[in-house]
Image (tube, rainbow, N blue to C red; front, side):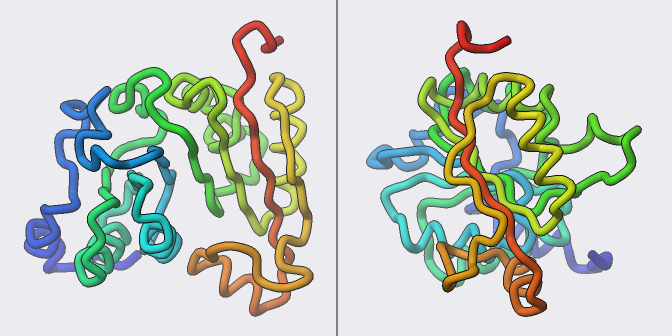
Amino acid sequence: MRKRNNLEPRMEAAAAVWIRNPEAYRGRWRELLPEARALHIEIGCGKGKFTVEMARLHPDILFVAVERVKEAMILAMEKTLEMGLKNVYYLSVDAAELEQYFAPGEADRMYLNFCDPWPRSKNAKRRLTYHTFLEKYRKVLTPDGEIHFKTDNEKLFQWSLEEFARYGYPVKNVTDDLHKDGIVGVMTGYEEKFHALGTPIHRCEIQMPKQEELP
């Protein structure tokens, strides 16, 4: 993302959906939408296409979107305000620090959409499907929580499936070509581009294991 000279004033103008002190909401996120039936977290929301469309379709779910790159996040926040959505908020934090901002068992679902594949083996620990990240996710998700994972990167997907199996995370609804028979669910901006190019989209759902089920 290119730098934006007017980023700070735009961020301030979107303050209504920008959570600048997320640690203060740890264990209290649902106070932002008391009637919410669930809390979903999206890691790496980018420009927010998936975020805002999901929030529009599910007004009874509270969405918290995490994005480190503010130049991208501001576009998502502005879309949220333009659409008048009241059930989505944004954090500019590192996914590795989730436990600082969410209490144990606070979230019901997490989305990992088109995360950086970090193709070099020496950078495997940075992949958001690496087992140390999985452990962080498991702690903030409810006992029956889920992770929904999508990527265009076949090597990352196969590696991730092996990582899930190695560390005892049950996987379901696995597909190597999600949109083969027609569009399924809400697409991200990247996903639309990949699909238009004929690139297969890989997807699966990870069920949180109980502590006693872990290796």
